[in-house]
Length: 394
Image 1 (cartoon, helix red, strand yellow):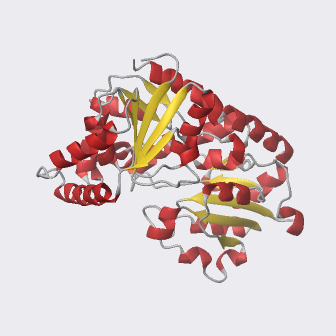
Image 2 (cartoon, one colour):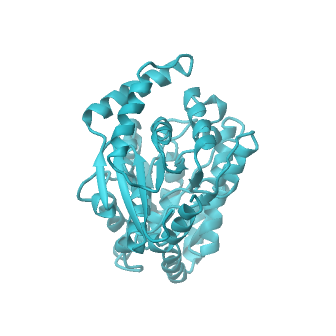
Image 3 (cartoon, one colour):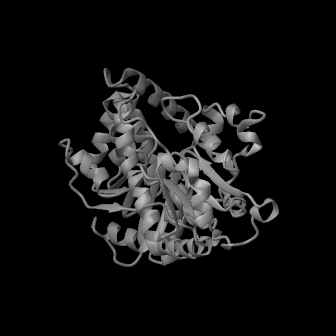
């Protein structure tokens, strides 16, 4: 592999901001040419982060969607006859992007990563966004996805993941053979999106605390997962501003959060915003919140996963200049915020008295720590580690 410019082909469904930030950081090093091949992408937003970007095309996208649905519904009981044809088709599309030195296959869906790895002659990196077996256990509704995940782990030449080493050790402990190098690569902070810390806040107008929640909001066990927690904050005159993920808008029942009188008018449901606009919008609040709490008896797999979860909420809040309130059961994320000195770690029993902790907190000091933390997580800084990782695959 050449030691000057490395050509990396990212293959994914639609590039999320993890993919976007990786590519933008790599491009900024001057030592890498990132390429993108996806089912679709935002030309104005994402294309400038890549030297070359292309979509699979509508015909392939439709064919792959039908194949994947049939494959999942069969749960591995039969081989779908269309697969050899899809592999030939995808291989031709990928060859049109050559030459490239490394394939970086990003999930979801894991089915697409498997096809891409099968079709690539270059070393493959498997980047599993949502670790299926670790997150959901064998109770996952589609055993076929667990099989595909294992195949990708055992056939890729390297592995990138968001959380600590324990994430992949989970699989090794179950007999998976992960032969290549691995890189723990939390979502980064994009320098161009950094908002001023300590700027004008809503608190300046009404004297009350305002915290932001961005992302998916529902989970197992109850219909409105975080509503009781948000109402507990509202009782303390803490406003909660919710910015649901696009997935939430399409698949989750959000009406309970915006019903009249919820939280005495202090729980606010906002719309889904394009990422750059979201970061600017969040800057007017005091803190971001990242909090989940599951019954470990009812949901053992997900409860264990919370310990290593590395949500993209923290970098997003950092970009907006916000310190973070993070739940103590999110052990890895809580340790990150704690080590950065950029927020408050809270347990279940502390939510009803959070206002007291906010009142006693050194907000100026927390904001200064956010500035340092987002420089540490800068995509330009992180890209150097990613480049070194790619070079290990030569």
